[in-house]
Each structure stands twice: as structure tokens, then as C-alpha cells.
Image (cartoon, rainbow, N blue to C red; front, side):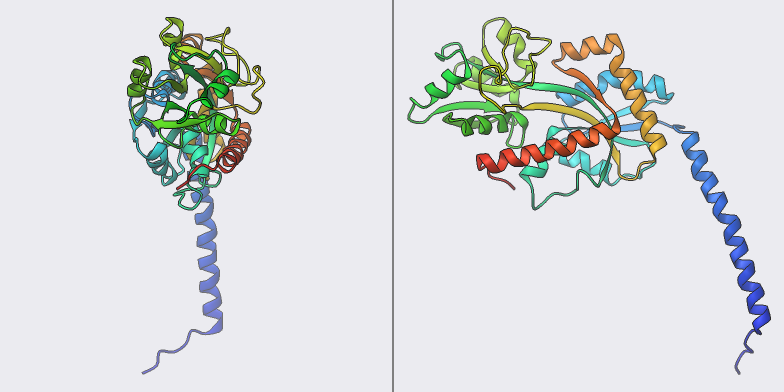
Length: 336
């Protein structure tokens, strides 16, 4: 037996009632979301370091977290998720809820060079899948050699490398790092170089100190060896001379233009992070970097503190991605 259809008048009343209930519910949901942001943060915050303990990214994050915890009023938990040049840890943040409780301290490797090295198999879009929070620090790469190598500047290094049948070997971090690609940049300037990548760069440093490998391209962590004479620094690959090594000339000063290969470090959250949360965390980051005690510790660790706002960081990262893509193409670097 068929059920009688609702008459038109009764149906209209029910529809209007449903619409009224929905209208009452929507402001409630919006109010809850607004309250969650105004109350932020109300629990501990996780910062993923996509590299191993003791790495420059890890050292930086652990120096900053105490000050940021005090400013935000909640504990910051640092979690190492190393692998694939930072990609594995970055993926955790990309997939996290944009509620302001999961961030990562990204770097040149995880949030720039990887786009050039893996153009067809990127597990995330650096620009679309993350919310920049702020740049925190830079770390310039340095070209250093064993003292037995008879060169004192980049031009001499290029010339000397071409006198050797097999060229000069240089130690660096694995392919896809800024110091590995710095060697590729030098090849485009005429140097005859062969890369020897080390998963553990400490072993690479040891091999150069022992004279097994003649050249080393790495960060300012090399400065102690340069100061005590065990290595000879011939150039820094930064725009200007380093605070920690004012006597070491840049490659640009030596006439080797476009030789910029600095590592950078900055915080990211997931995409669609509310602006109010992004701004609050970014302000805490800026305050931590400005702390004189922390600033000194970062300088001692070979890092140049440098803050950029979320907007300026987004622009900086976009330029850096484009620059490394150009380097990879120009040097004919094997990708994927």
C-alpha cells in the first residue's frame, strides 16, 4: 500500500525548519573554530626534524625550542624523522592536520633542491603543500683542501684539476645536498672534479684530513680544521664574507660569479594553516633568533641566524627552487 505523499504545505514547513536548524548550527561551528585559534596553543607542539640527531637542522631546532616554548606557553617536542634527504620527515608534516600542532624544520635539501633532483617523483609540492612559518638561519658552504694540494684560490683549483688525468676528487654530503651540487657548479666553471658523496660526512672529513681525498665542500663546520691548519680554506660560497671567518674570501670576490651554495633552514606547517596560528608561531621564532644567548650559540654552531616572515620566506623558497633547477639542468646532473 502506498504511503500518502506529504502535502505541499507540510513539506514546505519541514524544509524551512531544516534550513533554520542548519543556520543555527553553522555559527556554532565557526565559533568553535575561532575559539580553537584564539586559545592556541593549548597543548604541546611537535616539530619534526627530517634529519638525524646532531645534524645542523637538529642543532638549530634544539637551540630554538626552549625560547619558543616559553613564548608560546607550551612544550615543544622535537622529533627526528631522517631519510631521503629530508623527504620522509617533510611528508609527515605535509599529511598532518593544519591545526598548528605539527611543524617541521625544513632545509634546502627537503624544501628546495629535492624539487630539482626528483622532478617526476616528488611526494609533495613544496609550494602548495606547506605553509611557510619563517626562515631561521643560513649556513654557507666552504671549499677546503688538504694542505698538500698546491692551490690557494678557486682559479688555481680549476687550473690544477685540469692537469690531472682523472681530475680532483671532492668529498661532500650525498647527491642532492647543496655542497654536492656546489661541486657541479664548479664543473660548469671549468673545474675537472669527481664527487665522492658520504652518507656520514664525518667520515668524509676524516678522509680529507688524512689526505685520502684532496678536496672537501661542506658547511662552516669545517672552520675549526681551517683555523688549526689541518685544512686550507680557499673560498666561501656565500654572498658576503662570514661572521665566523671574515678573512676567508667569497668565490664571487675571486671572480667566479654565480657561485652561491648556502644551506638554509626554516619552519613549515601543513598547507591551509590559519594565518593567526602561522603569525603567532613565526613571532615566537623571530623572538628566539633575536635572543642574544641563542644567537651566539647558533654562530658557534656555524649557523648565520636570519629571520624572514612567512610571506618573504615563501618568495625566498620559490626563488631558491628555481635557482637549483637551473643549476641541475646547466650542470647535467643526473636526477631521480
